[in-house]
Length: 508
Ligand code: MG
Ligand code: MG
Image (tube, rainbow, N blue to C red; front, side, top):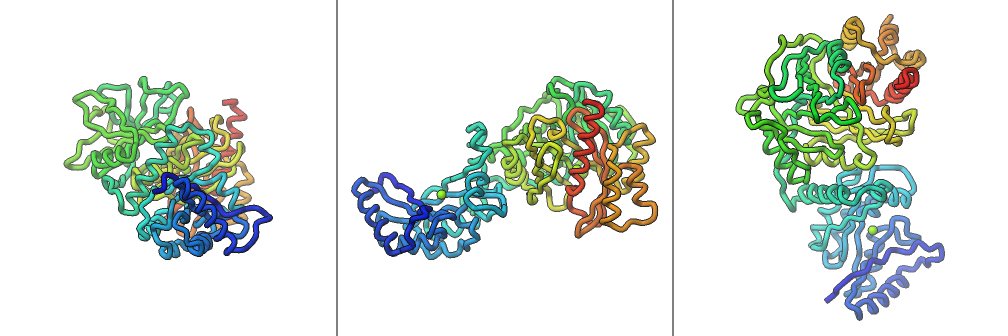
């Protein structure tokens, strides 16, 4: 009988009167008027309402009014931003919940109005348990729409098309989480099969890989792509027409997948663009999708029985690589376009089944960076997603490949002896380290000499150093001991400042 509904928020006026009976009476009169026009009224508590700021208070007023054309509107942001317990939703009859608005948000300590206006994001992209709230609402028998009410500074400026895809992916993951619409199961990647770099000029890149101890082991049969290996670390160097105008960059990641075809089906169900197989008919089939930043993700297998091996497209050119130095790729760091950061975290979590860690802020000479890592359970896949405040700057847009070693001092020495140049680290960094940690005799001097950075968390120790940057890409050597879980975020401002200084000196 109702053709439409209107939402009425709790008053924010400083002149508002704190009188629930009066509010109920006035809402009743409004509902009378609305009903004459076939309209019903949903009353919603704003988190910053003058006197009514919680959902249970709004419901008490609606219940007291007892009008058939008056119900309540629940908004996940208003409920969860105030820390209200959504369990109380069970006390509201489903037919009196007229509307449900959903938004997530990063967990921030700030004024709730500004938080709402600038930081709302799609469910699954922030820190709220939106799915838990939706479960409470569905249990009441509510059968209306799950609507999205999201305001933030990014969406106001971004293209509507990709934002709509992001929104729909968020709802699909949410429906799956609350058990309403099954998707193909996630196939969590079990390792990094390869990282593919495209470059207009292979010479500096292959010289750098050589200094790092990589050996060119194979060449693609049909394309200008070479395979460089060391331990389980594999780098593809592509000089073909796929090369983009802006120089050397990380273009693709091969993810070791227990079931590549099923991984691709899940990705497709979650609206990831499936890429054409850029391969000749005789080549091994490769399932690939595009991540929001355009990075190509290949679902593939390396030497596993029963699955096509992506290396079948390559022919050997060199000896087996020396397994003594680099063991594998520890992590990949991808800078995201400013409007894709939240989308990227949801994509990697939803599509790939990776776990998203909390965001951290990192000070950069150009502004503030936000960084968020996505990982699998055993840490064999780690991807750090970063977004910068100065999107046109090259340093901010840098990508890196971190290579795991059991002895970073030895690896750094070998690299230097092979003609490699490590990023010089300012001397006062080591004065600061000496004040913060205990070191064995000579240990700190070794780090200072090589440019090795040091961090420690509740689990273990992290030592790491960096190569110079080629195009957008640099490499990191990392030694992760005793279950250290981070990425050296405490050292990132030092690294970024050092890279800034090198750019200033070389003008490049
Ligand atoms: Mg709302
Ligand atoms: Mg790193």
